[in-house]
Amino acid sequence: MNNDLKGKVNRLGIMGGTFDPIHYGHLVAAEMARAEFKLDKVLFIPTGTPPHKNRKGISDAELRFEMVKRAIQDNPSFDISRLEIEREGPSYTVETLRVLRRMWPEHELYFITGSDALLEIFSWREAEEIFRLIEFIGAARPGFDASDFFLKVQQEHPETKGKIHYLEVPALAISSTDIRARVRRGEPIRYLLPEAVRLYLAQHKLYTDT
Ligand code: ATP
Ligand code: MG
Image 1 (cartoon, rainbow, N blue to C red):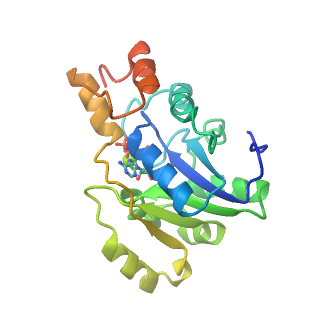
Image 2: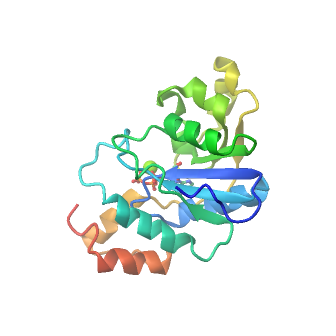
Image 3: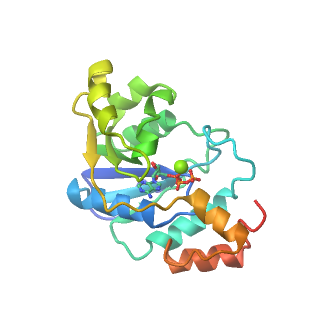
């Protein structure tokens, strides 16, 4: 794993996801979080075997890794990690965060999620521990209104106080699920994701029969 992030890094954003495939929704959320929270880097961490996803036939981790690599190549503030894809078995976020904390004990760490993922945080393993390790940036995502959640969660879970930050981003109603369905149906996906990713997934015949 690359713990030698290029350049000086004090404030680090973590963008975890299946990225099957990565699309502009992910990239916009990461870039707006970087600017708004003055992050020195955003580290994309593709999942290995995601514990929450039961969908059969998640694409091979190496293919998902390659797509992320291509998507972020022109942004010097974005980096990618093999931490989760190299770990055996399901990758729980809390395990990843423990490793990242050990690697960067002095850094300010922010986990960037969409509002859909934010609404599920308390179903994650060791949610309380997660809030001891990292703060959250929740990016608005069409279809998932998290505004009530922000009020309620701070009352019901005092350990989260001040540790969940709301981020308004230009709303992109793009999801990997929709992109996969479009490919399967032979519909266009151009402009929903970087062209290099579109060419890569076509070349590897991804999603044609999933
Ligand atoms: P799938 O449809 O397979 O679940 P997805 O589009 O939700 O894919 P994930 O890899 O599950 O993508 O998401 C990784 C992270 O990116 C999650 O925190 C998710 O909430 C966030 N995210 C995904 N799409 C968007 C979007 N359009 N706007 C904001 N955040 C997003
Ligand atoms: Mg998702």
